Length: 225
Length: 213
Image (cartoon, chains in turn purple, green):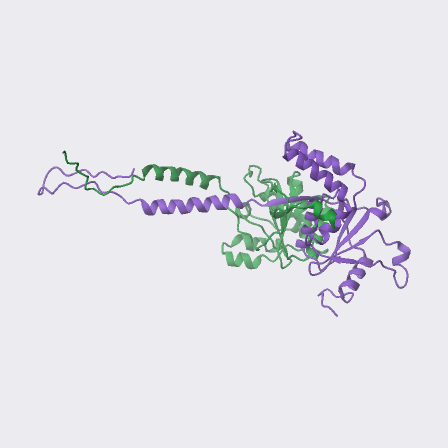
Protein backbone atom coordinates (compact mmCIF):
# COMPACT_ATOMS: atom_id res chain seq x y z
CA UNK A 1 0.00 0.00 0.00
CA UNK A 2 2.77 2.35 0.86
CA UNK A 3 4.87 1.79 -2.21
CA UNK A 4 4.20 1.93 -5.83
CA UNK A 5 6.40 -0.44 -7.66
CA UNK A 6 7.28 0.81 -11.05
CA UNK A 7 8.17 -1.83 -13.56
CA UNK A 8 11.44 -1.05 -15.15
CA UNK A 9 11.65 -0.89 -18.83
CA UNK A 10 13.67 -3.75 -20.10
CA UNK A 11 14.24 -2.84 -23.70
CA UNK A 12 15.17 0.21 -25.65
CA UNK A 13 17.01 3.34 -24.82
CA UNK A 14 20.14 3.73 -22.93
CA UNK A 15 20.59 1.88 -19.77
CA UNK A 16 19.81 4.18 -16.91
CA UNK A 17 21.22 3.73 -13.45
CA UNK A 18 18.93 1.57 -11.37
CA UNK A 19 16.35 3.69 -9.58
CA UNK A 20 14.79 3.00 -6.27
CA UNK A 21 11.03 2.53 -6.26
CA UNK A 22 9.54 5.93 -5.49
CA UNK A 23 8.19 6.31 -2.00
CA UNK A 24 5.06 8.33 -1.44
CA UNK A 25 5.22 10.56 1.55
CA UNK A 26 2.12 9.73 3.54
CA UNK A 27 2.58 12.25 6.33
CA UNK A 28 0.03 14.79 4.98
CA UNK A 29 -2.52 12.02 4.48
CA UNK A 30 -2.03 10.78 8.03
CA UNK A 31 -2.31 14.33 9.31
CA UNK A 32 -5.57 14.83 7.49
CA UNK A 33 -6.98 11.55 8.73
CA UNK A 34 -6.01 12.41 12.27
CA UNK A 35 -7.85 15.68 11.93
CA UNK A 36 -10.97 14.05 10.53
CA UNK A 37 -11.01 11.39 13.22
CA UNK A 38 -10.72 14.02 15.91
CA UNK A 39 -13.54 16.00 14.32
CA UNK A 40 -15.86 13.02 14.06
CA UNK A 41 -15.11 11.82 17.56
CA UNK A 42 -15.89 15.21 19.04
CA UNK A 43 -19.10 15.73 17.12
CA UNK A 44 -20.47 12.27 17.86
CA UNK A 45 -19.63 12.27 21.54
CA UNK A 46 -21.11 15.62 22.44
CA UNK A 47 -24.00 16.17 20.09
CA UNK A 48 -26.36 14.07 22.18
CA UNK A 49 -28.56 16.41 24.14
CA UNK A 50 -30.15 15.41 27.42
CA UNK A 51 -33.80 15.61 28.29
CA UNK A 52 -35.71 16.35 31.42
CA UNK A 53 -39.16 14.85 31.75
CA UNK A 54 -42.07 16.80 33.09
CA UNK A 55 -45.67 15.70 33.46
CA UNK A 56 -48.26 18.42 33.72
CA UNK A 57 -51.66 17.89 35.31
CA UNK A 58 -54.68 17.61 33.06
CA UNK A 59 -56.66 20.75 32.46
CA UNK A 60 -59.81 20.60 34.50
CA UNK A 61 -63.08 21.48 32.86
CA UNK A 62 -64.52 22.46 36.20
CA UNK A 63 -62.28 24.44 38.56
CA UNK A 64 -64.34 23.21 41.51
CA UNK A 65 -62.86 19.75 41.04
CA UNK A 66 -59.34 20.94 41.78
CA UNK A 67 -57.67 18.68 44.33
CA UNK A 68 -57.55 20.09 47.84
CA UNK A 69 -54.08 20.48 49.23
CA UNK A 70 -52.92 21.28 52.73
CA UNK A 71 -52.14 24.98 52.95
CA UNK A 72 -49.47 24.50 55.61
CA UNK A 73 -47.39 22.34 53.27
CA UNK A 74 -47.87 24.52 50.22
CA UNK A 75 -45.02 26.61 48.90
CA UNK A 76 -45.77 28.91 45.99
CA UNK A 77 -42.89 29.78 43.72
CA UNK A 78 -43.37 32.54 41.22
CA UNK A 79 -40.78 33.10 38.51
CA UNK A 80 -40.37 36.80 38.15
CA UNK A 81 -38.64 39.14 35.71
CA UNK A 82 -34.84 39.43 35.58
CA UNK A 83 -34.21 35.91 36.94
CA UNK A 84 -35.81 36.69 40.27
CA UNK A 85 -37.81 34.13 42.19
CA UNK A 86 -40.60 35.00 44.60
CA UNK A 87 -42.08 32.64 47.12
CA UNK A 88 -44.91 32.75 49.59
CA UNK A 89 -46.34 29.98 51.76
CA UNK A 90 -49.92 28.77 51.92
CA UNK A 91 -52.77 30.06 49.85
CA UNK A 92 -54.64 33.30 49.42
CA UNK A 93 -58.28 32.86 50.42
CA UNK A 94 -60.99 34.17 48.08
CA UNK A 95 -62.25 36.69 50.64
CA UNK A 96 -58.71 38.06 50.97
CA UNK A 97 -57.99 38.66 47.30
CA UNK A 98 -61.49 39.86 46.46
CA UNK A 99 -61.44 42.42 49.26
CA UNK A 100 -60.99 46.07 48.29
CA UNK A 101 -58.10 46.68 48.39
CA UNK A 102 -56.98 43.04 48.24
CA UNK A 103 -55.18 41.66 51.27
CA UNK A 104 -52.17 39.93 49.78
CA UNK A 105 -49.39 38.12 51.64
CA UNK A 106 -45.86 39.51 51.34
CA UNK A 107 -43.53 37.84 48.83
CA UNK A 108 -40.07 36.67 49.71
CA UNK A 109 -37.57 37.52 47.01
CA UNK A 110 -34.77 35.07 46.29
CA UNK A 111 -32.69 33.83 43.35
CA UNK A 112 -31.37 30.71 41.63
CA UNK A 113 -28.09 30.52 43.55
CA UNK A 114 -27.27 27.68 45.92
CA UNK A 115 -28.08 29.88 48.90
CA UNK A 116 -31.32 31.10 47.36
CA UNK A 117 -34.22 28.94 46.36
CA UNK A 118 -32.26 25.72 46.85
CA UNK A 119 -31.60 26.38 50.49
CA UNK A 120 -35.19 27.39 51.06
CA UNK A 121 -36.43 24.17 49.48
CA UNK A 122 -33.91 21.95 51.23
CA UNK A 123 -34.87 23.43 54.61
CA UNK A 124 -38.45 22.42 53.98
CA UNK A 125 -37.57 19.08 52.41
CA UNK A 126 -34.74 18.09 54.76
CA UNK A 127 -36.14 14.74 55.91
CA UNK A 128 -36.80 13.40 52.46
CA UNK A 129 -33.63 14.82 50.90
CA UNK A 130 -31.57 13.23 53.69
CA UNK A 131 -33.28 9.91 53.20
CA UNK A 132 -32.64 9.96 49.44
CA UNK A 133 -29.04 11.01 49.92
CA UNK A 134 -28.35 8.29 52.49
CA UNK A 135 -29.93 5.72 50.25
CA UNK A 136 -27.89 6.83 47.23
CA UNK A 137 -24.68 6.82 49.28
CA UNK A 138 -25.43 3.31 50.54
CA UNK A 139 -25.92 2.13 46.99
CA UNK A 140 -22.77 3.82 45.75
CA UNK A 141 -20.64 2.46 48.59
CA UNK A 142 -22.04 -1.02 48.00
CA UNK A 143 -23.94 -1.43 51.27
CA UNK A 144 -27.10 -2.10 49.35
CA UNK A 145 -26.77 -4.21 46.20
CA UNK A 146 -29.38 -2.95 43.79
CA UNK A 147 -29.57 -2.36 40.07
CA UNK A 148 -29.82 1.08 38.53
CA UNK A 149 -33.45 0.58 37.54
CA UNK A 150 -34.62 -0.58 40.93
CA UNK A 151 -32.67 2.27 42.48
CA UNK A 152 -34.77 4.77 40.55
CA UNK A 153 -37.86 2.86 41.60
CA UNK A 154 -36.79 2.86 45.24
CA UNK A 155 -36.23 6.61 45.14
CA UNK A 156 -39.66 7.06 43.64
CA UNK A 157 -41.08 4.94 46.43
CA UNK A 158 -39.30 7.07 49.03
CA UNK A 159 -40.80 10.16 47.41
CA UNK A 160 -44.34 8.86 47.24
CA UNK A 161 -44.23 7.66 50.86
CA UNK A 162 -43.13 11.04 52.08
CA UNK A 163 -45.78 13.14 53.80
CA UNK A 164 -43.75 15.91 55.39
CA UNK A 165 -42.09 17.65 52.46
CA UNK A 166 -43.50 20.72 50.78
CA UNK A 167 -46.03 20.75 48.00
CA UNK A 168 -44.57 23.16 45.50
CA UNK A 169 -46.71 25.10 43.08
CA UNK A 170 -44.67 26.70 40.34
CA UNK A 171 -46.05 29.71 38.57
CA UNK A 172 -44.49 31.99 36.03
CA UNK A 173 -44.97 35.70 35.56
CA UNK A 174 -45.12 36.75 31.92
CA UNK A 175 -41.68 38.38 31.98
CA UNK A 176 -39.95 35.19 33.08
CA UNK A 177 -38.01 33.21 30.50
CA UNK A 178 -37.67 29.60 29.51
CA UNK A 179 -34.32 29.27 31.26
CA UNK A 180 -35.97 30.12 34.59
CA UNK A 181 -38.60 27.47 33.99
CA UNK A 182 -36.01 24.76 33.35
CA UNK A 183 -33.91 26.00 36.27
CA UNK A 184 -36.75 25.73 38.75
CA UNK A 185 -37.70 22.24 37.57
CA UNK A 186 -34.05 21.33 37.86
CA UNK A 187 -34.03 22.60 41.45
CA UNK A 188 -36.99 20.31 42.16
CA UNK A 189 -34.92 17.36 40.98
CA UNK A 190 -31.81 18.47 42.85
CA UNK A 191 -33.69 18.93 46.10
CA UNK A 192 -35.68 15.74 45.65
CA UNK A 193 -39.05 17.43 46.00
CA UNK A 194 -41.72 14.72 45.88
CA UNK A 195 -44.71 16.84 44.99
CA UNK A 196 -44.52 19.73 42.60
CA UNK A 197 -46.44 20.92 39.64
CA UNK A 198 -46.66 23.81 37.28
CA UNK A 199 -49.88 25.81 37.40
CA UNK A 200 -51.25 28.96 35.83
CA UNK A 201 -50.56 32.18 37.63
CA UNK A 202 -53.57 33.86 39.26
CA UNK A 203 -54.31 37.53 38.64
CA UNK A 204 -53.66 38.47 42.27
CA UNK A 205 -50.30 36.76 42.13
CA UNK A 206 -49.40 38.88 39.12
CA UNK A 207 -50.34 41.94 41.19
CA UNK A 208 -48.12 40.69 44.00
CA UNK A 209 -45.13 40.33 41.69
CA UNK A 210 -45.76 43.71 40.12
CA UNK A 211 -45.93 45.31 43.57
CA UNK A 212 -42.70 43.60 44.60
CA UNK A 213 -40.74 44.27 41.41
CA UNK A 214 -42.12 47.79 40.94
CA UNK A 215 -43.78 47.15 37.58
CA UNK A 216 -46.82 49.20 36.56
CA UNK A 217 -49.74 46.79 36.23
CA UNK A 218 -50.74 46.16 32.66
CA UNK A 219 -47.41 46.95 31.03
CA UNK A 220 -45.79 44.09 29.21
CA UNK A 221 -42.49 45.73 28.46
CA UNK A 222 -41.36 45.39 32.04
CA UNK A 223 -40.27 49.00 32.39
CA UNK A 224 -39.96 50.02 35.98
CA UNK A 225 -41.51 53.13 37.47
CA UNK B 1 38.00 -6.43 13.85
CA UNK B 2 35.24 -6.61 11.35
CA UNK B 3 33.92 -3.32 10.32
CA UNK B 4 30.20 -2.82 10.68
CA UNK B 5 28.86 -1.05 7.72
CA UNK B 6 25.99 1.20 8.56
CA UNK B 7 23.28 1.53 5.96
CA UNK B 8 23.46 4.86 4.28
CA UNK B 9 19.74 5.04 3.56
CA UNK B 10 17.80 7.39 5.81
CA UNK B 11 15.49 5.40 8.08
CA UNK B 12 11.96 5.34 6.86
CA UNK B 13 8.98 4.55 9.04
CA UNK B 14 6.48 2.38 7.35
CA UNK B 15 3.22 4.16 7.89
CA UNK B 16 1.07 1.63 6.12
CA UNK B 17 -0.42 -0.09 9.20
CA UNK B 18 -1.11 3.27 10.79
CA UNK B 19 -2.87 4.53 7.70
CA UNK B 20 -4.86 1.32 7.54
CA UNK B 21 -6.05 1.64 11.12
CA UNK B 22 -6.90 5.28 10.63
CA UNK B 23 -8.90 4.49 7.54
CA UNK B 24 -10.90 1.86 9.40
CA UNK B 25 -11.60 4.14 12.35
CA UNK B 26 -12.53 7.00 10.06
CA UNK B 27 -14.91 4.86 8.05
CA UNK B 28 -16.51 3.58 11.23
CA UNK B 29 -17.00 7.07 12.63
CA UNK B 30 -18.33 8.43 9.37
CA UNK B 31 -20.88 5.67 9.11
CA UNK B 32 -22.07 5.77 12.71
CA UNK B 33 -22.15 9.50 13.23
CA UNK B 34 -25.43 11.34 13.08
CA UNK B 35 -24.58 14.79 11.96
CA UNK B 36 -26.06 17.61 13.91
CA UNK B 37 -28.75 19.12 11.75
CA UNK B 38 -28.46 22.82 11.17
CA UNK B 39 -31.43 24.40 12.90
CA UNK B 40 -33.20 27.42 11.42
CA UNK B 41 -32.65 29.27 14.68
CA UNK B 42 -29.72 29.09 17.05
CA UNK B 43 -30.86 27.90 20.41
CA UNK B 44 -28.80 27.67 23.56
CA UNK B 45 -30.44 25.09 25.74
CA UNK B 46 -30.51 25.63 29.50
CA UNK B 47 -28.58 23.38 31.86
CA UNK B 48 -29.98 20.67 34.09
CA UNK B 49 -28.75 17.69 36.08
CA UNK B 50 -30.77 15.24 33.99
CA UNK B 51 -28.70 12.50 32.37
CA UNK B 52 -31.42 10.97 30.22
CA UNK B 53 -30.49 10.99 26.56
CA UNK B 54 -32.89 12.27 23.94
CA UNK B 55 -34.95 9.56 22.28
CA UNK B 56 -33.88 8.81 18.71
CA UNK B 57 -37.24 8.21 17.11
CA UNK B 58 -40.94 8.84 17.55
CA UNK B 59 -40.31 12.43 18.46
CA UNK B 60 -41.76 15.76 17.66
CA UNK B 61 -39.62 18.63 18.74
CA UNK B 62 -40.79 22.15 19.24
CA UNK B 63 -38.01 24.62 18.75
CA UNK B 64 -38.67 27.91 20.51
CA UNK B 65 -36.29 30.58 19.34
CA UNK B 66 -35.32 33.61 21.45
CA UNK B 67 -37.31 35.89 19.11
CA UNK B 68 -40.49 33.97 19.98
CA UNK B 69 -40.90 31.89 16.85
CA UNK B 70 -42.09 28.31 16.95
CA UNK B 71 -40.56 25.65 14.73
CA UNK B 72 -41.53 22.02 14.57
CA UNK B 73 -39.54 18.95 13.64
CA UNK B 74 -40.74 15.37 13.48
CA UNK B 75 -39.77 11.96 12.12
CA UNK B 76 -36.14 12.79 11.80
CA UNK B 77 -34.26 10.01 13.49
CA UNK B 78 -32.45 6.90 12.31
CA UNK B 79 -35.79 5.16 12.52
CA UNK B 80 -37.30 6.50 9.36
CA UNK B 81 -38.66 3.16 8.25
CA UNK B 82 -42.09 4.47 9.06
CA UNK B 83 -42.04 7.66 7.10
CA UNK B 84 -44.96 9.79 8.05
CA UNK B 85 -43.74 13.21 7.10
CA UNK B 86 -45.41 13.17 3.66
CA UNK B 87 -48.63 11.82 5.16
CA UNK B 88 -48.77 14.62 7.69
CA UNK B 89 -48.14 17.23 5.00
CA UNK B 90 -50.87 15.73 2.80
CA UNK B 91 -53.29 15.88 5.72
CA UNK B 92 -52.26 19.48 6.43
CA UNK B 93 -52.74 20.30 2.74
CA UNK B 94 -56.22 18.81 2.76
CA UNK B 95 -57.12 20.84 5.82
CA UNK B 96 -56.01 24.11 4.27
CA UNK B 97 -57.04 23.35 0.68
CA UNK B 98 -53.51 23.05 -0.71
CA UNK B 99 -52.55 20.14 -2.89
CA UNK B 100 -48.92 19.12 -2.77
CA UNK B 101 -47.30 17.33 -5.67
CA UNK B 102 -45.39 14.10 -5.33
CA UNK B 103 -42.16 16.01 -5.75
CA UNK B 104 -42.97 18.50 -3.01
CA UNK B 105 -43.84 15.69 -0.61
CA UNK B 106 -40.51 14.03 -1.32
CA UNK B 107 -38.69 17.29 -0.79
CA UNK B 108 -40.46 17.75 2.52
CA UNK B 109 -39.52 14.24 3.57
CA UNK B 110 -35.88 14.88 2.80
CA UNK B 111 -35.67 18.30 4.45
CA UNK B 112 -33.37 17.57 7.39
CA UNK B 113 -34.29 20.30 9.81
CA UNK B 114 -37.12 22.03 11.63
CA UNK B 115 -39.76 23.95 9.76
CA UNK B 116 -41.49 27.06 10.98
CA UNK B 117 -43.68 28.74 8.44
CA UNK B 118 -47.36 29.16 7.63
CA UNK B 119 -48.69 26.27 5.55
CA UNK B 120 -49.69 28.76 2.85
CA UNK B 121 -46.01 29.45 2.20
CA UNK B 122 -45.05 25.77 2.15
CA UNK B 123 -45.26 25.40 -1.65
CA UNK B 124 -42.91 28.32 -2.15
CA UNK B 125 -40.58 26.92 0.51
CA UNK B 126 -40.38 23.46 -1.02
CA UNK B 127 -40.02 24.85 -4.53
CA UNK B 128 -36.75 26.64 -3.85
CA UNK B 129 -33.38 25.27 -2.90
CA UNK B 130 -31.86 28.59 -1.98
CA UNK B 131 -31.10 28.61 1.72
CA UNK B 132 -31.42 32.37 2.00
CA UNK B 133 -34.91 32.29 0.48
CA UNK B 134 -35.86 29.41 2.75
CA UNK B 135 -34.61 31.14 5.86
CA UNK B 136 -36.52 34.29 4.96
CA UNK B 137 -39.71 32.24 4.71
CA UNK B 138 -39.24 30.70 8.16
CA UNK B 139 -41.31 33.15 10.16
CA UNK B 140 -42.59 30.70 12.74
CA UNK B 141 -45.77 28.62 12.82
CA UNK B 142 -48.89 30.71 13.44
CA UNK B 143 -50.45 30.02 16.84
CA UNK B 144 -53.19 32.67 17.00
CA UNK B 145 -56.55 31.50 18.22
CA UNK B 146 -58.00 32.28 14.78
CA UNK B 147 -55.33 30.45 12.83
CA UNK B 148 -53.79 27.85 15.08
CA UNK B 149 -51.69 25.85 12.65
CA UNK B 150 -49.47 24.42 15.39
CA UNK B 151 -52.47 22.63 16.91
CA UNK B 152 -53.22 21.17 13.47
CA UNK B 153 -49.67 19.93 13.01
CA UNK B 154 -49.83 18.25 16.42
CA UNK B 155 -53.21 16.72 15.60
CA UNK B 156 -52.07 15.19 12.31
CA UNK B 157 -48.68 14.08 13.62
CA UNK B 158 -50.38 12.22 16.45
CA UNK B 159 -52.93 10.76 14.08
CA UNK B 160 -50.19 9.33 11.89
CA UNK B 161 -47.98 8.23 14.76
CA UNK B 162 -49.73 7.86 18.13
CA UNK B 163 -46.47 6.94 19.90
CA UNK B 164 -44.86 10.27 19.27
CA UNK B 165 -43.22 12.03 22.24
CA UNK B 166 -43.23 15.76 22.59
CA UNK B 167 -39.92 17.51 23.23
CA UNK B 168 -39.47 21.19 23.81
CA UNK B 169 -36.19 22.79 22.90
CA UNK B 170 -36.05 26.37 23.93
CA UNK B 171 -33.41 29.01 24.32
CA UNK B 172 -32.59 30.20 27.83
CA UNK B 173 -33.76 33.65 26.78
CA UNK B 174 -37.02 32.58 25.16
CA UNK B 175 -39.85 34.54 26.72
CA UNK B 176 -42.21 32.60 28.91
CA UNK B 177 -45.50 33.49 27.14
CA UNK B 178 -44.54 31.53 24.01
CA UNK B 179 -43.52 28.52 26.13
CA UNK B 180 -46.84 28.72 27.96
CA UNK B 181 -48.66 28.96 24.64
CA UNK B 182 -46.95 25.80 23.35
CA UNK B 183 -47.67 23.94 26.58
CA UNK B 184 -51.31 25.03 26.48
CA UNK B 185 -51.78 23.91 22.88
CA UNK B 186 -50.21 20.56 23.68
CA UNK B 187 -52.36 20.13 26.76
CA UNK B 188 -55.50 20.90 24.79
CA UNK B 189 -54.49 17.98 22.59
CA UNK B 190 -54.07 15.77 25.68
CA UNK B 191 -50.31 15.70 25.64
CA UNK B 192 -49.25 15.92 29.26
CA UNK B 193 -45.78 14.42 29.21
CA UNK B 194 -43.01 16.58 27.84
CA UNK B 195 -39.31 16.25 27.40
CA UNK B 196 -37.40 19.45 27.91
CA UNK B 197 -34.13 19.39 26.00
CA UNK B 198 -31.26 20.51 28.20
CA UNK B 199 -27.50 20.32 28.46
CA UNK B 200 -25.89 18.43 31.27
CA UNK B 201 -24.41 20.27 34.22
CA UNK B 202 -23.52 18.37 37.35
CA UNK B 203 -24.51 19.88 40.66
CA UNK B 204 -23.88 18.54 44.11
CA UNK B 205 -25.76 19.54 47.18
CA UNK B 206 -24.39 19.51 50.66
CA UNK B 207 -27.17 18.74 53.08
CA UNK B 208 -25.03 19.06 56.20
CA UNK B 209 -24.13 22.59 55.29
CA UNK B 210 -27.78 23.50 54.90
CA UNK B 211 -28.68 22.03 58.26
CA UNK B 212 -26.07 24.03 60.09
CA UNK B 213 -27.35 27.34 58.87
